[in-house]
Amino acid sequence: RQKVILDCDPGHDDAINIMLACASPELELMAVTTTYGNVSLERTTYNARVIREMIGHDFPICAGAELPLMRNRLSAESCHGASGLDGPDLPKPVRDVEPMHAVNFIIESVFRYPHQIKILPTGPLTNLALAMRLEPKIIPLIQEVVLMGGSVDVGNWSPAAEYNILCDPHAARVVFESAAPVTMFGLNITHQAIASPARVDAFRKLGTRNGEFAAVLLEFFREHHEQRYGWDGGALHDPMTAAYLIKPELFEFRDMHVAVETQEGSSYGRTNCDYWRVLEAQKRSKVGVKVDADGFFALLTERIARFP
Ligand code: BDR
Ligand code: CA
Image (cartoon, rainbow, N blue to C red; front, side):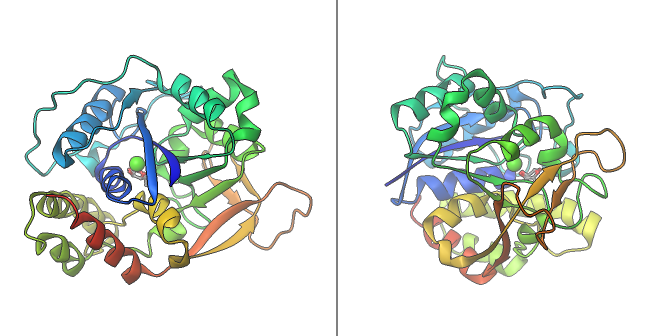
């Protein structure tokens, strides 16, 4: 089983990624670590506890960064609602978070299981960057970073930048420039996976509490995407990270250098992806370019069916 840490800011699509990981025997979820992101840290951490309660799992949760490294904090209520998880009725969580900080959890886990842990960030990269700076010796011991963020082409929170990277461009730079292998799922691929009404219906037709939970989450998530892009569903960004570990054959990749713009200005937070490999000698990340969207949603439906 592949050991994974989900470092996230739930978040509708983060929630679906947690569900996918928990339902999949191919993965061993070491912990969910939380960061500020879509909403405040307090709220994303609460939401992680809500999701754990909802699906009846017992993974540990460690809270992490409250603020970006340098810039002011952004938030995305316009997309995820005031709670960060608007839409469904949420249960009151009982179990609390662990006392350990997310950054320390990441460091300790990588030392304990060298070359065996994949870290899946689906929010700002602050926790991982802090871990890499606090204890640089973990960097060569991280098996892989599989992140949702950036874009080969256009942005979503600015014309140039994708939200997670824009939230903390400096942290993103630390991660992309590190020696750790990075696999990136950016908007160029996540926008190929739209949770259309028919795909959402497939969750609902499972007739289960959690199938309904997933459906209602995605119906709320759709509103922002309808308004901004005119799409009939939300782009299901974050679950590509876990799906890739479960069924890599759903995806196509291209290796390219990724540079993050940290100069404030109109390109702040943009991932400059060297698609044509103009810069020969640079570190390359594995960048997702194409997904079998039907296969991806079929996997999600099959796995969400395993919950009550
Ligand atoms: C990313 O931003 C967040 O709102 C989503 O959860 C996803 O991680 C997409 O840009
Ligand atoms: Ca997210």
